[in-house]
Length: 443
Ligand code: HEM
Image (cartoon, rainbow, N blue to C red):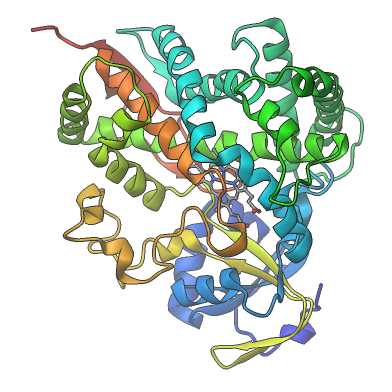
């Protein structure tokens, strides 16, 4: 990475000694960005965890870096912090190698496969939601994380969501994700990284033992699809590649979806008029199966989902690494610079979004379409070669959840005025979102 001297011509807020801006970024990353952009403009530097990084802000920067016409921005080095636990995942690969593996993974995301996943998820979702208490306060964020992991065991691995193995896998996953985000980066005994490395070993052993079984008798789950997946030239993955890609996929799917659903539930609790609109939409699709055709009718739900992702994006920053030097907005940025892109702050820009702090899902209606003002104005799923491969899957999952919940329940916030959002390292409600569910009154 480059030294401070090599970036001396780039402006930025004064850096406290040793820790630099790390504590401020953890405490108030959006505040630091907003004041820095106001003072220094859309290109400025900060020091995070010992590394000087250049922030390139705004939709134009997202477009330039993510479309990456000259193959100059490495995602692999950008996401280096994930390397110990998630080596070989798609986001930790670049260019030709990435393209080839993404083509193989794409096979697990084709329309017929997505239809099977929805079918598989519908029953499990219904029984998991039915377990939640009615009329009694509980923490939605904890409950939805548990639900998505257990659902993941079913749809991703073809395992019963409440079996003993599912519980052990969940614990290993939680340890792995916690370690990926921990400050101590070596597996010193009993630190999160130590638990994470052990979790990874357990997950790999378990997945490995399933490969032969699933190749011989594949199910409709993701893991079976990935054991069979091949690109157009008939190339599939080795055992080790399946383990790495699958492990990464589970990580990429889990916290992101939990954050998105927590934001939606917070919004529906805080704006009951929108809960009524979505409940009416769900009622309109009737009591039939919640298949992909039924979910396609949930256009208002989709607008609420988009607005939730705009206000609290699960991935508010995207890191990259400049392989060669380049010039942006008049600044020469040297080879080896760590770059940060800021979709989170871009999606709060009044340049594209009217009254941007306000919850207003109709901004995504066809007649307003504020997200179309710039190709990269609304980018919760990133863009370019690494654009989220799970975007359609997560949209289906979110709609299925909302339909399942609102068919039988209404949700109220237990502490209406108290929800603040932690943005780093994973966006989540600081109070873990206490809610109370109520039965739907039958006419
Ligand atoms: C609301 C939910 C989600 C959000 C907001 C989200 C966001 C993102 C973003 C921003 C990226 C690009 C990161 C970059 O360019 O550096 C990404 C990549 C990725 N996502 Fe998602 N994601 C979500 C759900 C999912 C789900 C459900 C899955 C899997 C089923 C998934 C699998 C992946 C994978 C494999 C990649 C890497 C793609 C590549 O590098 O080619 N994501 N996601």
